[in-house]
Image (cartoon, rainbow over all chains, first blue to last red; front, side, top):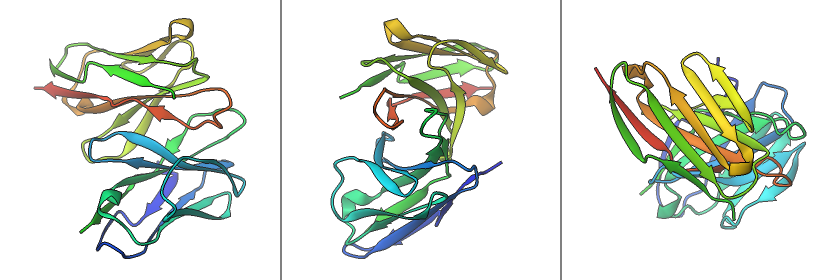
Length: 113
Length: 110
């Protein structure tokens, strides 16, 4: 049963455009994450949010910005996309304090032309 | 930084055979998860096993923390097991951020 929801499933855009991806979890977790999976299928952490506070910010370009309205939602905005941003973006959630199992959404596949 | 190495990179089995997947990591892990990623891309958590042995269905994971390694055993493989198996760890003080290995791509033939 899906408990981490992501929209859209797929997005095609052109270089320089702005895109925004949404993520919502219904598990009552207090921490959410964004991961990027590149063309070589390697998954890397981008951001982690705990109770609306950024607690991990890997060295991603400034054009990426996470946005959270509450602990159940974590969106990702990309200003002025570049070709190398083409990837699958995966949202996940967990309980931080228990270093609990992370649950992943289905991903948003971005293609930048 | 932390590194997670998985082997083999790919594996082809006949249906009914067993598979043994390996994960080695460079730091002491406080959390270790095995994931399955379908050919369609969705990521599913299989087992959370930072130490010891855990079973679920046809899957058995054994993690030896002090040796920084974990294995995933799949018994009596089925064609529906085909996909990529990913190992991921987090370490103390990392706020539970996961570092992933590159995965083992499994193909089970009928």
